Image 1 (cartoon, rainbow, N blue to C red):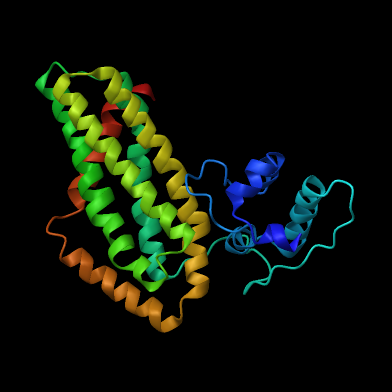
Image 2: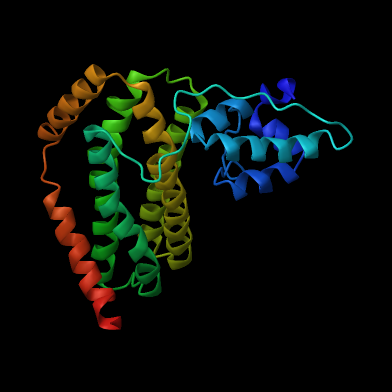
Length: 263
């Protein structure tokens, strides 16, 4: 079992596909990950399952890998023994989680935007341009910049979990570029395809950050580092060059346009 704990999760899942389903049941969604080189033992540590759940999950995985053997499950060493019922974020992580709220509101609106796509009228095209501006300015320059240029620098950026986050950001940027190219061609099908792909990407990305990455980072940052991080976040916000408030106005407008009429 020790040898498999030191294997990349994609290698383990490829060899034993049933492992993916077990991980899913414990809220560890490694299947969709496009990198998949995190070690099995590191995944357990990062998700910080309660000790009894960890042992239970690993015993089930061991039965898949070694169906005819009785395997002693090694305890994975962690700083925190039991998962708290409610995640308590440090001030800088709470700031990022709070920024996710507005991004999630935009993500929730994307199906309505797709259902009402209009690439022929000036108003319809402008709505899409405004949506792209929200993604590029608020989600990327305002939010992702604090992660990539500040937060991730406190850790080894060769860590697989950070590679996954970087790759998610780049995939999102690629979808945005394709949406703009499709808008130039007035290609509604391509716009809808990539808006929906962006939506699915961000839903999973935010979940990974809120529930896995940020709590793990909080456990590994000192009080001094947390204070420095919060100060750097504030400095970054002051230098952004625009007010994020305008994007809340944009989201409020879309919610009124699409959601309140359904109430």
